[in-house]
Structure formats: structure tokens, C-alpha cells
Length: 587
Image (cartoon, rainbow, N blue to C red; front, top):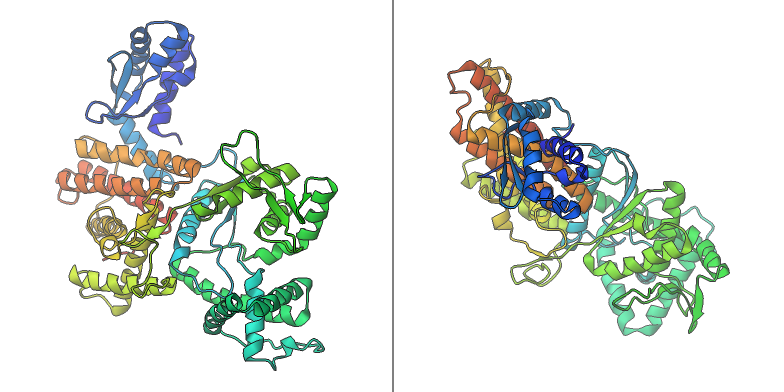
């Protein structure tokens, strides 16, 4: 299903082609001046320059072709050769009807579906999710929803940090507190206990203790390095204890994910790349892609065209250990063999941009996966009102579980203040409060341009006015209420007949969904979908005020406006779902 811009582009492109010019000059886009036109085409000037012809003559010929189309109510040449088009009611009526009947609410799917791997989350074992993990989780989830919606084959992977020095620190700290556990007895032959000797609360306490001790005591740090090496070498007791660490952590992480409505296809970690590390080290050394430099094995990834220094990719350090460079390259190798993605997206803090540039270049040099099939989706930070990364009042990092709890409690208070939920069961009020809080958090994050920082202000995000998640929920619920009352009154939807300016504006807003979906996917920028949802809700509000629906006496007009409402509700809910927001039935 083509949007109206695409249909107009076909007509204008054919007109340019008939003049012996490239059809691409006929590209139509939304008008910068909606008071003058719905769409505009600026191709006549570029075509005239290329063909050394008069731009107004070209524009006039294209305008004549556009006027002959039943899509167009009026077409005019303006200035040196701008083409302005106003759509016909027939075109708008047809487009709204298509949108209403389309299960995809008017959005295109991908012409050639790809295999897409999305790496997001990236939490560490033994550490709870905190507010700093929110952006990767929400942005990554919105992208996996969007790419699946477009027909791509998507696999999402949390890629846990489970294989570094922190594991050795946890092992020796656990041994210090519980030295009699069988995991530390090299002579023990098993089986090891099935129940973990530590809880998530223990891990949250043990890791900071061990880290602080290692900073003060080099002997302790050396012991942690030794434990890490023995774990990675396969010492049975350490492996069994490590599996407990991972499982206990995963249970807590899955709880947070459930609260956010986020799911992963794979729960792999850095450890899953370990089997590939010896192979890739041997391979890169054998082909002399890796070179020895001051005791370390590196891959030089700098290019003559670089305008800044790009340090080499570190394969093996001078101590003989491997780090994030090697495990990330091993993960690329693993994914190529298990899934062979056409595209891999890494949704990770923008501050890791250099790391990924090094890894992607090394992958291309090695011939594993071309760099243009690996993409870092960087993002800015969530800041407090002081403009610095968000902290608790005590200066610590807020746990994500606590943030969600605070947001839901605040949402319940806001609902009471607004008089929403009176007469409802307590369980329903609780569900509504949860969805309002989730919408507030997610929309606040995703509505900002991904690459920028933003200030987290829960009070403002929970408002039912302005560009907020709760405002959009309220708009959707109002539409649902209207549809329910129509059903109760026996009012049936009927053919759309756009007449009023508010109806035209709403119809044009509905048509914008296709472009919003395509642009969001192309640019990996969820704020575009958020903008569309907000504009759609605003257009419906203006329509609702200007065009009575159930109170309309003309049955035909009433039925058409109900169809316009249904199309808007379906598309708004679809848009919100793509950014991970669920709407309640009533509020």
C-alpha cells in the first residue's frame, strides 16, 4: 500500500519522464506551508539546471499532468518553479478507508526482508539493572518491535557481561565468606549443589566489597586475575559457581524486563564467544592480520583518510589475556555462523563509539563480517535537573526496579488528583497506574532524539497535558470510549467523506504513518514515531472538537466520522505498541 506522497510521486515522475527528464525529479514531500498546499515538489529547478531549460515551463507541464489526476484537487506553479499540490477529497477518503481496512494501519513492510540481529541491554552479571541501563533497553526494544513489524527476521540478544575480572572478584570474595563450599575444593568431583549459595542481594554486596579490596590490595587483585583465568580455563568448581551467579542475576533481570514489557530471543553473554577466541587468534596471527607490538598482539585498523587517531584493535594484551575487543569479535564470528545476519545493530551508549569502530574495522579486515553490516546505535545520557547523569538524592545510582516503583506510585497519585478511576476496582486502578507510569518513562526517553542527552523529570513526564505518554494514553482511551458508546447506540461505521478542514488534517496525519515507520527504521530514530503519535493525537483532538460524531444528526456523516475515529484509534495503538506502550481500555 503506497502513501499519498508515493502516489503523487508516481504521477509527477511520469510527467518528468514524458519531458525526457529523470522521473526522480518528481519526488513529492509534505509541504513546508500546509496553509498553501498539502504536498510540494521542488524537482523542476534541479531538472532545469541539468537540462538547461526553463524551470517554470517544466513545472507548468508537470502541474498540467497533476491536475489531470483524480488524486489532485488543485496544483499550482509558484516562484521560480515550485509545485504545490492540494489533494482531492476522493484521494483522502480512499486513503483513510485503506488505512482502516489494513491490518498494518497503512504502513509498508520491507520489500526485501533481511535477517537482523539487535544487541541491546548489555547488563553485567551480579549487578542489578539501574537507571543507566534504561535507554539501551527501551531503544533496543522499540527497534526490535519496529523491524519485526516491517517483516524483517529479527533475533535480539542481551549480550551479558559475564566473563571478565568481575567474575574472578566474585569467586574469591565468596570464598572468603564461605570457604567451606565445595566449589573451592579442587579435589571435589561433584555433583555440585543445585541451589545457589548466594542470592542477588549477596551479589550486590559482594562485588563492591571485592572491587574495593582489589583497588587497595594488589595481592587480592592478582588472586582475582588467577581465579578469572582458572574459570576461563574450565575449573569445574568455578564454572559451577559462575553458573549460579549467572542464573541468580538472570532471574532478577527477567523481573525488570517483565516490568518494562521487554523480551529477548537470546540470553547469551561474553562467555559464549570464548570457544571462538583461540580460533580467531590463530587465524589472525596465521594470516598476519594480527601483529606483535611491544608484547601485545594487535590489528592496525587506522586508515589514511582518518581525521582523528584510531588506536589499534587489541587482540591479546602483553599479559596474554583477551578483553572486550576479542570477545566482541568472537561474538561476530558466532553470530555469522549461527544466524548470518544481514545487519547487526549494537544499541550501546554513544561513549563506546570508538570501541565499536575498532571492532567493526577489524571484522572487515579479517573478512568475518563487512563493517557496513555492523552498526553502532549510540545514544546520549539521561540526566538529572542539574544536567549531570541522573543520581539518587544520596548521590548513588538509582536501581531500575526502584525507578519503576516510584513512577507507578506517582502515577497512582496523579490519577487520584485527576479524578480518574473513580468507581473502578482497585486492581484495575493499579493496572492503569502501571501503564501510565510505563508510558511516561518510555515516551519521555524515546521522544527525544536518540543521540542527544535529556533531563529526567518524572513530574513533567506524568502530566496528562502536552507531549507525554499519559496524554497519548488518554487520547486513545477517549477514542475507545467513543467507539464503545457508538456500539451501544447501534451506530455502525460507514464510508469516509472528508469535508471539514479538521477532517482533512486528520486524514493527512493518518497518511503520515507510512513515512514515519520507514524513516524511523532507516534512521534508527524512535522519536520520529513518537512525533507521529503526538501529531495524530492532536489532529484527532481538533477533529473531535470541530466535528460532532455521536451527536451528528446526519447518519451518513456520523458513520463516516466513526470510521475516521476507528482508523485513528487503530493506528495510534499500533504506533504506541511499536514503542512498547500498551493502552488500557478505560481511564
